[in-house]
Length: 253
Length: 130
Image 1 (cartoon, each protein chain N blue to C red):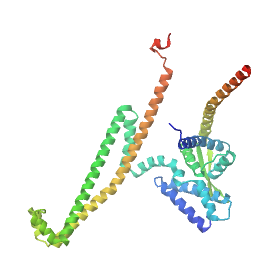
Image 2 (cartoon, rainbow over the protein chains, first blue to last red):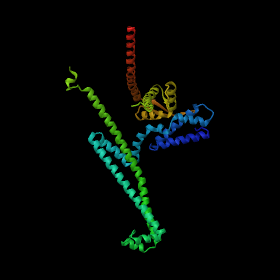
Image 3 (cartoon, one colour):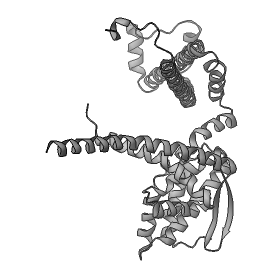
Image 4 (cartoon, rainbow over the protein chains, first blue to last red):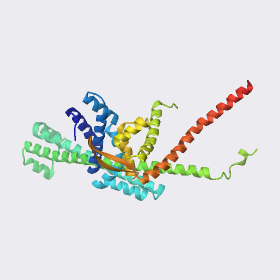
């Protein structure tokens, strides 16, 4: 099926990869179908494009075809909705349910509820990131402390003498039983756990952020449509209603 | 406020985009086509200047709305081709849309007719005065 020269095959495959990366949110079957279609188009266009230089021909074909983002643009909104259902992403589904339940039937009231819920979700996300940041900060502090204890024990002792570092209670008793190097190692271990947890939460937060952004864009889109409908309705009513009560002194002379 | 070239380009692109969907349906009304052949008809006979890939979002939208149906057909000249045909619903939609389009065109042209009439009236006045 593939009758391109090697250089052209490489260029075409690279382009198809770029298209594919834009289609990640589509179901696999739909992705394959569309990629086959693009492949078929490129082949026909290449065959019909005159020229001796194969690379120049395929580049001209791709230039005429357009950027992958433009080519797939209209497939994505539907795909986003499908991917929400398919992947069971809670925020995507919540978004659909919120707009279906509150957005449309309850008009302005529902709009208020929806905005309130979104604000609550945004607040939760801020709290989430604040917690993650605190975890990261604590991890860094413990790491620095552990490194100081392990590598600069004299400096540590001096800080203890001056009262900047105070260890007491069961933890202090426990630390006194092990060597300074082991104390440092233990702290570095703890710091690593904190830092790993912070890193994991940051990674997870990316999904939450994306979900929230999706919810906001859905809401704003709905608001825009709602406002347009209301504006149209008002304009129509204005045109249809007779101008009763219009001050007569303006028109009558 | 200035009417910039960017604004102008954006509006022209928007206008073309709107018409393109109707043009695609118009081409598919008479014959079935695959993406590349559809582009050729539009650019060669319809004199429309488009990025070839932009036809696919339109076809995807029409397909999603049930206005076209597609089938893969083997080709003896290369990879299989995906042919599109307008469904009965698509034909109905095309008829309705083209009526709407005619109405919009006549509305847009009314402005020119009014100007032409005013111009003719002015000329008559000049002749009479002369």
